[in-house]
Image (tube, rainbow, N blue to C red; front, side, top):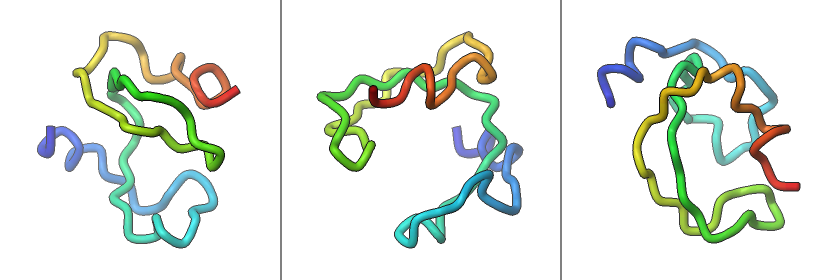
Length: 70
């Protein structure tokens, strides 16, 4: 996974970044990860996330609007 992410590295975040994420490693979104989680927090984060693998979906069809908290 690390080598794939290294190949997708970009220089800047695609959105305004909160302070605690300023040192994050940003990549071009080409992989779709399947994640199970308990719930969305009030801050819009995942509670108890667990990586289940990568899917065959195209990254362009998985968006915050379609998959994020409602």
